[in-house]
Image (cartoon, rainbow, N blue to C red; front, side, top):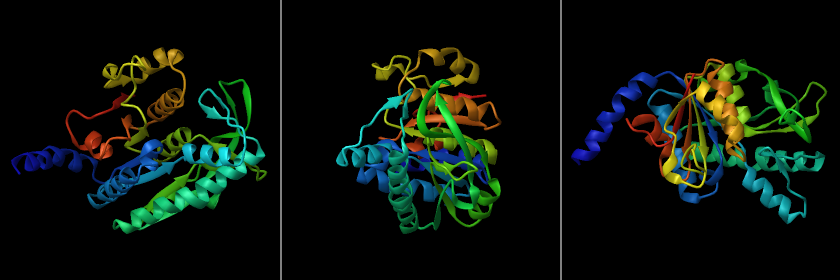
Length: 281
């Protein structure tokens, strides 16, 4: 019991500091697929709202998209950690992200005590998107990058609800694009002037040696990340790029945390040690 009280007291100054602040949470990986973790995540986000923070959830759904593509015999290919997307892939991604994943998250948040509203980039022209070239030179189809986020839509909804945003959008001509969820979360955090952005991943954190879980980089500056970015590959690279973009455009700090751990959000936000990687401007 004493330890439980100590934990609450440890969290108190953080709760006070974060009150009224906007926290953007990129939700994905095991935290979206493991039934126990799914429920824990919903409870954690609801708790953030109850203690006076303003959480915004931005989600992908890569494993689910891949699973449906495999069932339909569609090829799956990634370049620089981004999914190659033809028109059929984008159509399927919208069906999975908007029609299934988004509504599942909204329902769970509501069941745990906070009403939520599901959105995608098409709603209220939330995202204006243009074609993205992987690595700056590889055309990987209908993969987009966000040019503009309409914060009026999010501000209006966030007054009374938890916004839940699926990472798809369209350009001015109405062409739909698959958008990397890390980049979408970063764009939302930048536009909202968020206090923090949190990336849930399927690794312990950013590791100096990807094969050594003990090599966690607990803190780094934006300059240190940029210096080491060239040696990073796979899915961690878009996350670090999204962290850089966020903190260099005014977001307070960015966190990469292990979404496979129970209550990882709360452990990173409300404990002195934290569990992931924190990136400063």
